[in-house]
Image (cartoon, rainbow, N blue to C red; front, side, top):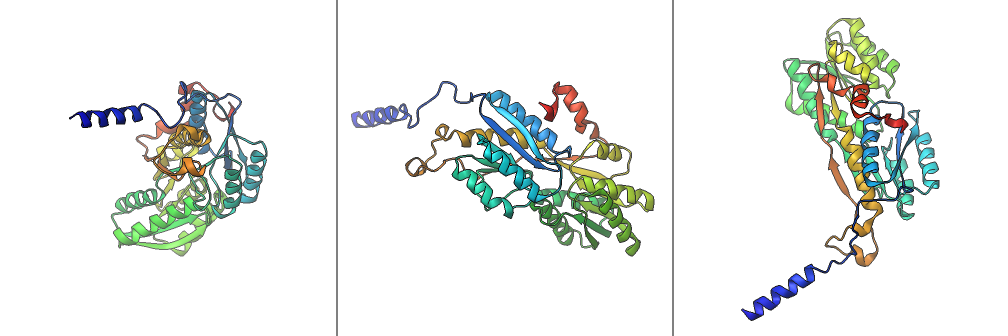
Length: 339
């Protein structure tokens, strides 16, 4: 019994002596620390709720957050923005990389400089990014396929618009088609076209596919911009083509409520921004973490390889009012990306 008591006291003594120095306010950063969010097509409304919650997390942590990106759908220009941000030696970078491969070297270089990078929405999985926050793109494609097929009674023709090379969009399209093939044998893929988030290209593509396939019943696309053109074409054709997409903006919400768009799957963008900021903070302050591995001996950052699913919402005419950006900002009392 004495031996057991002595052993227990030894364990308690060990547990009471933490390996890492403890801070009374571990989650209180320095207001001079800057964390950047980098986008592409930076005026797209999708990004705004992401930054809104990144900004809130930054305010709670006492650090500075900055929204930036390129207004074009151009990976070369997004890479240039990344380099400009890197030259400012930020504390951390939250980015949705337009394409995965071109960002491997820049992200690895940032890591070598001690600047953690977290990806969101789209990933660069072979890079040294420390975490990836996203909705499950495969699940998005599957849920969209089920919704369309059920509405069509499990039988009919469909097409897809895509943006080849953008990782998250490619995954959504592949999952949508895969779900149709595995679960809905009565659904037939009759067309694919690259719209590259261009409403005009989407408009022309839907008109062309409908002309070649008069029984076209649905078109799916992995983002909102293409849906503007696709829905216009569907309305002009007047054949009841169901437009299904992911992401929303004010115009898309209006169209969903008016019955011009069938529906949308919207990732919980705010969770992407909030958890993305928290992941960056923890990666930028590795002394907060003492996992059961060898990183404390090797000098590696113990925070790496974290994958987080932020979940999704199915947007319909019944719940569309909850997704308007202007109403959201009014409720929160902020200036959004301008802060």
